[in-house]
Image (cartoon, rainbow, N blue to C red; front, side, top):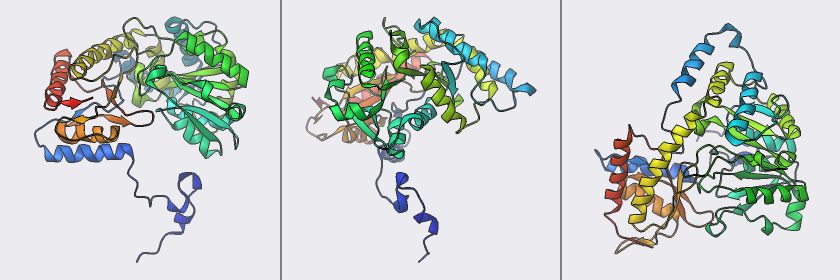
Length: 413
């Protein structure tokens, strides 16, 4: 028997301690990967339709790519950028005003770049969370800030996103002790995975809540530019008082089809931005200047996002129509590329679904359609309209194929 390495005893408790790597728990996304592989192997010649990937299917705009190529050739762009170049910060401030109507952003003190929004969410707790402090999160949701809060000895309080509340968190459910110990409130609208949007009234309530309880608001606006059917992109910072209580994280990944480019920026309260910059300065040396310059081009061309939004809106229309015809109780979201769908009870004369994970696995195995299950606050699956399709006719073909496959069953609701 091979002797265990001493390193096994040195892992931190935050990632599992001496048991790190030994567990046999299979997590949600790994289950999906395994089911997809098995379904493909069992059905040679049948394409798996992947509606689970939350990543844009288009390349970045040609102007963005050309700018990177040009800037990458410049000798002066080869070095560290630390907390970012002024040109990007100025472009970000201009973008906030032109797209969201947020005026008066100081590029020097109220903007800082991040190598994607995920690192920003991971770093921010280090600036504020001490052992025993609380970060308020929403569930289902993106867990990164909560994970790092717990790694720092803090606690996470999850507020469920329920359909009856339009998938907005109910802040009144927090206890007096939770509000006293809370330092950070994380919000994300348009929301992943529900596709829900926030309105001015909700943000006003959030600002009043933050002021009353001395809490910092972190609004993750990764999907803020992707809106449809008359709903205009809304920034948390547009609401009076927002900059007094928090920041917004704007990402180029989804709005500009630049996921792998890793560009985002934090904007808002100068104290929070400065704290982030300090933590960031001890984590990385900045994004490559060529990418920052390419991002400047993107921010100067918001029509890129408008074009992308039209595509997602069109796909949502088709997918909502098909699923509605099959009996699913859904409406088109006003933002994001996600469709959050309540699951059926089962199939007539066949299987019953105890939860969303069972339904998602069924769709993969029986129909070669991949989705992401969420059982955190009700049983839902998330469809993403970022599937790869070469033009509108191909989009229609894929949606019709989804209809054909699902029509083989009679779902019970």
